[in-house]
Length: 252
Length: 217
Image 1: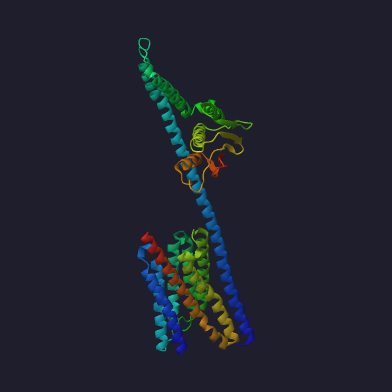
Image 2: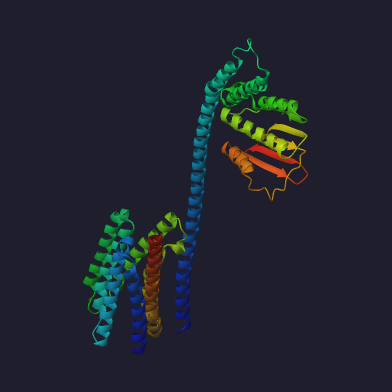
């Protein structure tokens, strides 16, 4: 094999092999880019699907709440009213003092059912803000026992759709009830904020060990409901250090 | 003679492996299965006939001159099955390849010489089409290229037909300068052929595995 011929063969062979390697490299790069694009498209599709699902679920929740609200207001409340009238019938003739506690309990029950019916009514949130509803709740709780509930508002009230307001109000109620019932809190602070939209509820109760109560149904339920409305709920707590719930709207 | 038999044996082994692997792919699971099997069978028949001709001391150029256009058409059929939309390009390509073969046969005796000019034209056409097929796979495949059977199949064919063009051109040039070197370079063709059929076998095994896992699901 002479030198010239050998060099020629080596050059041609090298060019061919380099050409093939280059082609494979280019193909790999094109394919990688294609797969990244495809993955992004899939993620976008899943996100869109999740949003649609969330919107459908919200619609269902809204519908259910509206129906339950009007059922409580129009039906259950009226039935209780009939019982109330029945109990008071002929009171002027012979009032029975033994029935007084039952009458009082029934009056309270009618009141509660009406309130519940109102809060479940989406239209109510058009006239009232979440802050106003929580302030009323805080007043009621503060009056009921040895408890101080502070509500701190941001400059502007939160503007939320009806169903979101209802669900967040229920979340507030549950968090406050938990703080009183399980945490034995004496002071609770509800702080509303606009950026990001949401609120923080802090109590000085017993708190709990999050590693042991991590899968508690009530906590999961709060997170799930907030999630459904496009909010993130996070609970920060430790034993004997109170509990703090942060509910924040997810960025769009 | 011994080295020739050894080379043929290596080629037969690679071809037989590819043939068995292709045969094992269920008929309906892969659109490329039948044209591919036809192509491997044709190649196997050609190599056996060529070897028999060498064995009986006959000139085997005619075997290759008949096989080349047939294999070209079978590969165009394979490409058509891969991308039926390419039909309008594949027909003129088939016409061009067959015409070049016909003209080369008119100019030189096909029973005495392998029609290398026509082989180069056909190889160039197939190289262009195979690069387009690989590009199309890279652009459309949602899985990594090494897990796509068609990628290995077309890559093997590209190595073979893409390698044929510089090899034939180089051998002819080197032959005029140094015939001993040209003879030494004769190992490249069987090497390319073995690479092609090993890639084909790999593609078929991959396809059989994919089909198996789909059926299992």
